[in-house]
Length: 153
Ligand SMILES: CC(C)(COP(=O)(O)OP(=O)(O)OC[C@H]1O[C@@H](n2cnc3c(N)ncnc32)[C@H](O)[C@@H]1OP(=O)(O)O)[C@@H](O)C(=O)NCCC(=O)NCCS
Image (cartoon, rainbow, N blue to C red; front, side, top):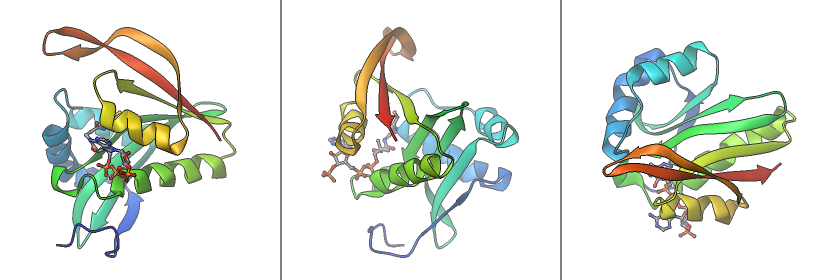
């Protein structure tokens, strides 16, 4: 398996059968992971659920919800050994293109205040911090604020 950006890969709809693989990545990369039910509910609700796949191995995923004229990126994750190779940026750009195709005006997301790596990626793409949700996320010691970020499409 080649983790490099230049190798052939597929971005496709997430299926219920993918959830065993998706949840393994989710638990690897998030301290407070989504449950399998969170993902299956997102598929049932017909949110835009996508996986990145190479040679039948899933190594990344994301879920985008659409409100009347806004996209909400609910989660995005790249398996640990595939991180920092440009895949997260590629998947985010995929969702931005999808949101533009749906004629949405903006994309919103929440990021933990401590998640500076993800925030850097979002800033690099053009997202701007527009608000803070106090104590939005569970944390090891109490709660943690979320930064709300917005990209005008
Ligand atoms: C956040 C995440 C999706 C980024 O995906 P990735 O494939 O690792 O990131 P990329 O390689 O595409 O990085 C693109 C840019 O983001 C920034 N970046 C990403 N991770 C970073 C980190 N840990 N530290 C510093 N910068 C980082 C860099 O600016 C990088 O730009 P460069 O290519 O010019 O160096 C991935 O690291 C991940 O799954 N993390 C755990 C789950 C998570 O935090 N999800 C986001 C929740 S809001």
